[in-house]
Length: 85
Image (cartoon, rainbow, N blue to C red; front, side):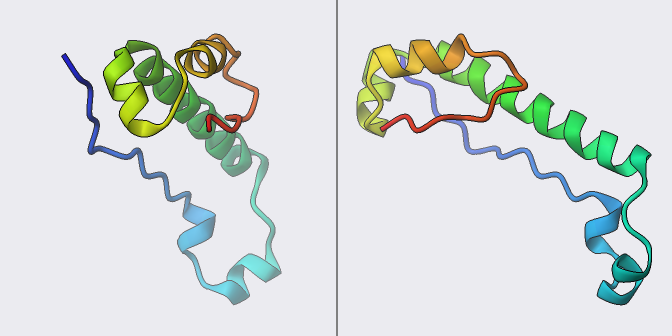
């Protein structure tokens, strides 16, 4: 069984879709920064869960060693994704 995900979590916070002049005039609020941070943490959690579910063949196809995948899958959500190759 192989795992292949074609879905990518896309997050566009409100302050990134507004005009450049409006963003320059008012920096993002605490609530907006918090929402983006939580969304990034959620994306990392989802990515690590998907990585943990991948079988050895899928990992090999992606050029990721099983040891690197296991290490990355075990990291906490607040840590950035590391290099897997």
